[in-house]
Amino acid sequence: CLCSSQGYLFNSIPYVGKDEAFDKEMGLGAGVVLQLLDVVENPQEHEIYFDNLFTSHKLMIRLNERHFFATGTIREPRLIQSILEDSKKLSKQERGCYSTAFDQVNKIVSVKWFDNAVVTLASNFDFVEPPVPVKRFSRKERQLITVKQPRLISAYNASMGGVDSLDNFVSAYRISVKAKKWWWPYFVNYIDISLTNAWRIHRLIHGNKVSQLDFRRRVALALLSCED
Image (tube, rainbow, N blue to C red; front, side, top):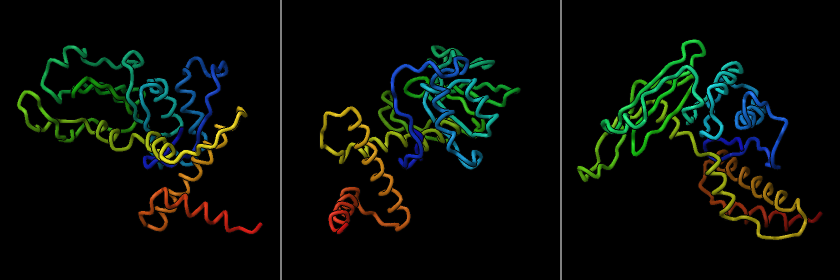
């Protein structure tokens, strides 16, 4: 799914099993990202965030070529020409420490940051500096402490999660009518998504805080009142 950070669905690809048509050089995850982004008309007006299932150094290069701004968590073997400090050594240092590398040729920055665990991210547009102070609970000191968080990780945390939000919205009032046709779950799921998208637009336009349940009730009453 391609969603806004508020959970509005722009595009989606149904999973139908193993796909042999994807670009083997890029990988299946990268192919999904590129296919989803085909609907975006003005790449430079958006920032794209995704997790390590999709992220690779090659994908970041391809998105650079298509003028997309992208950041994602990444599995370290997928990095190219970016040597970061060993995770075990980093985890023995002070909490909040980080290691960075920059691919000068392709303009891709990567960072490994030690928080509760070590996390690695890559970006083709964002920066590590200046670090952002964040609060964390220290078991050793038994109180909140301030640690440094690389800028691009802070941006990732603030913007990531749109797909999870959509899933939560849909699951809250999912249509429970069942049928034996194979296409039925797919059909009703998109009715749920359409209602969720309409609800998000309604709140955005009218600036009110009508709940999703009340919005669905209004839609149902409006449909029942139609004579045709």
